[in-house]
Length: 408
Image (cartoon, rainbow, N blue to C red; front, side, top):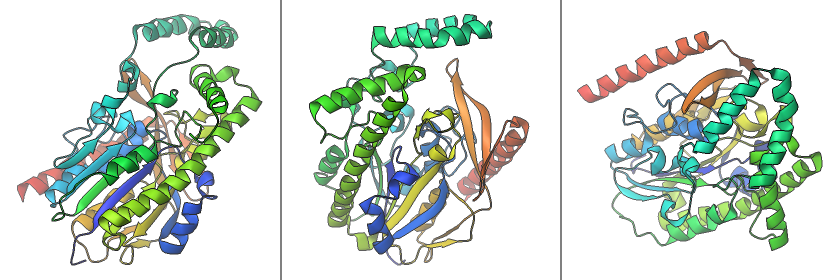
């Protein structure tokens, strides 16, 4: 690699592995690129899945509060700048915006925060009424029978009174679609003297589900259902879950077309013969499998953890070796090697990968369990002492490596 490649990472938020199998873009990638199998996310939701990809670390190893820390010296936009790259960071997700510490050192950063009316909860703040609800739940939990007998009634009344939360997960007017991102990128004027590192976060397959090609009546129904999904999932009927799956599939089809348009645009502006494009999901999405809906922080199931990943563009020299499973954070290692100008950038499969499940309690993220993943099964464990030993070792190694780098 005598000339540094442009590198783009495209996140397809919530795109399931099985949904990817029927997409036209997969057939294109199989013919013109590289499709990788047995890829697993390190976390069930964006809060820790994307930081893991962009820093090459496990959740809670360096990033402990879902925000990009200045201590994360391996953060790819920062490393890109060190190696002479200009960054193009475009995100449709509040969780990967400047509100959560994401930044670049040089280039273009757009998170569309100024174009949407978003509630404080989208920025990680808790509403006072949420604290009251939590207090009521705490009291009820002292009597398990009372809690579980009143939970459904409470959720039904809450949904009827509020019609669900109004945030980026439920309101179509707050959804930044791929066509908006494509239009924004097409108008950018960039330096032609520096290679580009691009990060593009697409939200089409994230709730609220419902392609813009649907009728107003269908979209109204979709909006009501998804608010019910996020407010009172316990009262969702089976036929309503099936309808949510239908609306989700319309988004898959919309994303399929949009990805083709986005890759065409990247080709026109950056030339795919000089660009490596990596497309992957941060996590999948659940529709009732094993009792899980959407992608909760503790949702350590295959439908959420197994993700699609493909590469197109300049891939002739890329080497993926071994067998087993490929953790999503391995993409970080590959991109680093491209930044360094290695002739044959290479990463390898592992025998096992780890995914970490968590919950947010009293404003703080807390590990509740983890999954050990091989190519055959996902094994859940709550042995947090064992996990903590792994994280401590990795944390020490991370600090030592930083000291070595800054001494050079």
